[in-house]
Image (cartoon, rainbow, N blue to C red; front, side, top):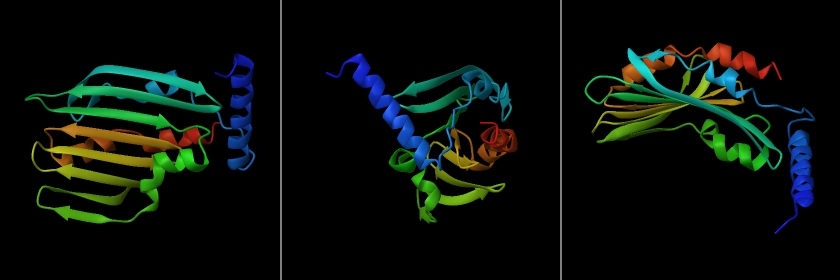
Length: 177
């Protein structure tokens, strides 16, 4: 088991490597409070029932995640997650955002999955007809992943919920670090 000093040295080495992979820029994830402040009180006429945010700095990686849940009538719900991938680069970044490099449109009897754009941002949408379960993921400003998961609601309602999230405001946070 590595000592605390060895762990600190590994974290610093990882941080240096990530800085190099980010064209020499030291990128700090936004604060948890900042990201949590972007979670709307209501979404698609559903009231927020819970919200949380946390910033994690481990082994040189700096990222922030904010999450909220919204509950509607008849067991309808939406979960919203906004992730600032911060200084992630290389294989770690690819693991979180590989879907942004693809172009596809898969149609099935049970639903569909396709890449698209929302505003000027690359995204993917998935929908299962049974249970009306849908997911939208959008990659904002080459740094933030905004994800909506809807249960019991049509995709059009999930897209309207996405319209309530200020993607341009999220994008502006990328230039602030």
